[in-house]
Image 1 (cartoon, rainbow, N blue to C red):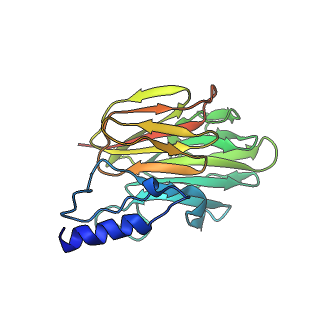
Image 2: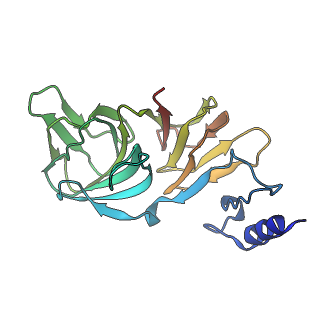
Length: 233
């Protein structure tokens, strides 16, 4: 065993994430354990919090990819959670496509100034897409809500977001994939790999391609979200 392999073995032996050593992925170049299909497992509740671009609220940033050579704060894609506490306009993101889904609370209404968007977003884990430059006012349907968000720079990436329940087979992708567990455990089954079970508040992220997988849940209602982000070629 060479030095890199000894370092990797020691790190894996000592690592423990959420009490599950299988959740810790320590990859060292040249190590026999290196597998590019292993995801990054994220504790969403520990992700950093930032202010909204318009200063009217806060958001938790789960993951993002910066644009090469871009200005500070620019991104190719970004995934996070918005904390919605009071009626407020949406931040404007020119040249960006957005997805939104209620994950906690009663939800909101969304209406654009020209009337093309007029939506009651109250059903949990039902994604909706819209252009980021739309001028949207929003109103609470009752109390505070948490809203899952995916933003992609339109000229660089295209994204899809769908809800997960019971059992879903997802084909392989060469691009970015995230499985976000919201209300009930999600078990990810991949050929020739140990099963990975995500608990509520965890996400699995593949940044450079993901294999075919089956995602299983005991919940009959949607309990998780699947995100795919593909580069524009």
